[in-house]
Image 1 (cartoon, rainbow, N blue to C red):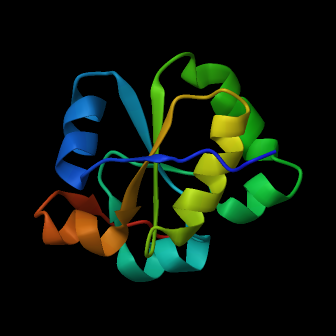
Image 2 (cartoon, rainbow, N blue to C red):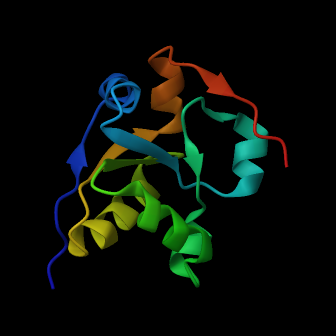
Amino acid sequence: AFAADVAKVTPASAAQLVAEGKAVLVDIREPAEWAEAGVAAPAVLLPKSDFDGDKKQWKDFLAKVGDKQIILYCRSGRRAETVGQALAAEGKPVANAGGMKDWIAAGLPTREAKP
């Protein structure tokens, strides 16, 4: 199987798609990173470790998300690319919004994620 290219979207586009109800933004970093740096305000928090493991949290999410686009981000965009390729291979509409720093640089709202 070849790795599907995952579409890139800007944080601003991601925020707009989420606001319009067409997409769901997912932060796939780990809980310690969420606590340390905060998260994008509209993000669903689903760690990559869960995706790579038994997908307990991911299964519920994927069952509920319907046909909305899944927009992923992490710290730099690299993990988002990996998870995005796996989701694309399952036929999910997916995009990569890069890293948390891109979201912050775009001046988009964040929130605290305390454990």
